[in-house]
Image 1 (cartoon, rainbow, N blue to C red):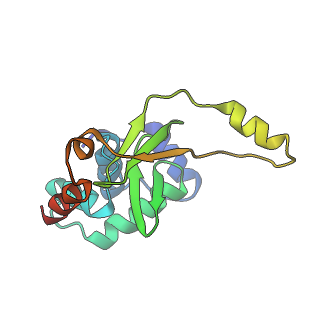
Image 2: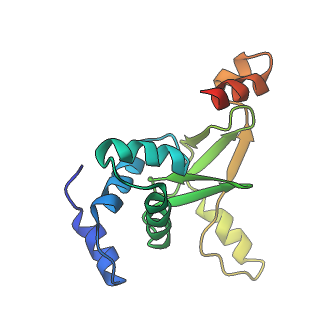
Image 3: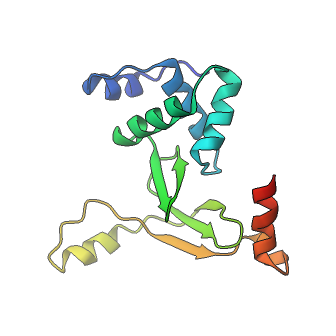
Amino acid sequence: MQPCDPELEQTLHADGLRITRQRQAILDVLQSTVAHPDAAWVYDQVRQQIPNVSLGTVYRNLQVLEDQGLVRVLRYGRFRRYDGNISRHYHLACLGCGAVCDLGLDWQDRLGQQVEQEGYEVTDHRLEFYGYCLQCRACDDPLAVTARADSD
């Protein structure tokens, strides 16, 4: 586990929260992957460091980290994926296997500015692309990739 980040500690303390071992482990896991995992995957990873952590603890702390702006939650229908990279960036969600990938596109502030010309106050924006990843494109039946991933 990485040492406690002073900025993280300050963010949490400002709202009367502590940086617990579990919170730090969850944040470390999310910041060390580009996979945009679900809570179950985060739980499995954190259990390797803290064997007695509960799934409920992981869910509660993911919510705290989201509320504090320390992780981003990507909602796809009833599914949630977590992103430890809170910098402004775009995603591609694969319609075949469900993978979510970061895209190396420049952030487009002008999109928000164009919307503001319509009279709205824009605080942020989220632009996502949907399509098929390389693995699914190479497969004759992209849904078969999903079935294989679900059975693992």
